[in-house]
Image (tube, rainbow, N blue to C red; front, side):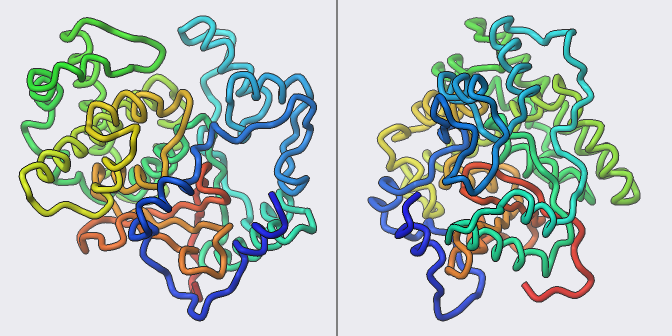
Length: 374
């Protein structure tokens, strides 16, 4: 990172109010400057530290070499990297690794986390620390989210489930479980959908797998909403996000809902109906000019070679009908420090809050202060 870029990110603006998301920016600017998903942050073969010695990733030379070669995320520890390597080689879950590792780690004090992770003296490090300080006026703690390119989905879904007061209307629709069959009959290209650790050429098998994922999502959401206290839901979420088999099925369900939402937006636009601005930008990209390309080049790669890009955060919000509020720390003291997806949400949509240092990896702020100033 250059000093000039650091200074630019920390430049104050006249007002410090929460701003609408960057979706209204010029389309060419979005295409040229959109942040890369989390997997695209790399370390050199001999790197032991990353990000101008500012954020400390404790990786050996061999681990860093492995990360570079496999384009791995830099937010995982050595055990997770090794486990993923075994899974990729075997194509199946390995009994040699316990399935009790939390995908969302316990709370730690947010300022302690900031001081531990950002000790450098660069202007960028100072910007991030000041961002954390601003967030600490509203939230006491932070929960670190596992970074395997699902982190945006994981953080959003964890928050949505842990504060679920009722089963959303869109999950109560009787035709929800018919959605895979309905779409696959209409769009043959959906048979190219990529399931975790496997490809399938059998439409019936794929259809059943996705339907099973949707049913699991509905069942888990219903279970959470039936719990009487936040503490109960939090404990249940911790348990759910220990089980890799169920956890990743939930991500498949959410990804398919994102595809379904994208198809509807695309069809509405083709019919001349009014659609959200982000939908234009979503299909203005060379890699996703239509839903088929979006699936093959983006949704199929989610969790493998990349995470969610900025415009896809809007799609996630629409798919789950939740407003996603993100504290973007590197945008501290700019109009984009607090970004909403979508920027004009429905009043009835629940709000989930995330925190990011770089628009690639997302963590969860926790425990709101009794009195806030942010």
